[in-house]
Length: 179
Image 1 (cartoon, rainbow, N blue to C red):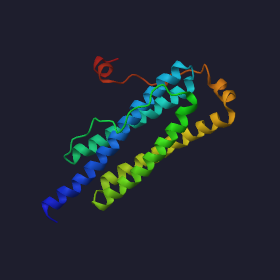
Image 2 (cartoon, rainbow, N blue to C red):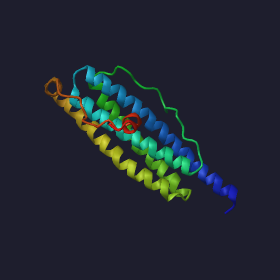
Image 3 (cartoon, helix red, strand yellow):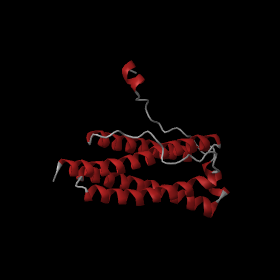
Image 4 (cartoon, one colour):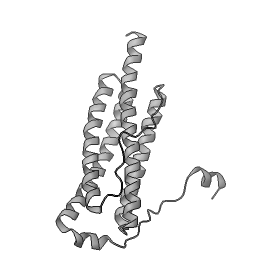
């Protein structure tokens, strides 16, 4: 295989990794926006779970970026599509379930591109992330079904619950400050 063939195959993988990264960056922004909105609507438990899923998406975006850099590419900072703001609670969960379902479908196609271009490392990353996206889909679909079937009864049980994720502050500033 010539060097140019190898580079072309690598570029195909970098391209799908960057498409996936842009999808993750969108999901992070979408879910954090929803987290803030749910918290403002006093649905703390729902806000907490959406925030935790957004944190998963941040980890995914970083996994893709690290792999892109390993392959000699430049990770994108662009979102794949605009964020929908000010969604009603009844709209959030079916919207997110649909988004996760589409993501799983696309990532399975991206996984095939990795396999066809001889990149088992990137393929494994997609396999891992697809499993986690399936968990996100299951959660969003479950909550969507509860809201659809139980409506205000379900939402009234969630209203007033705490939004804290209990996460320790572990960012750079805290780590460097020794706290």
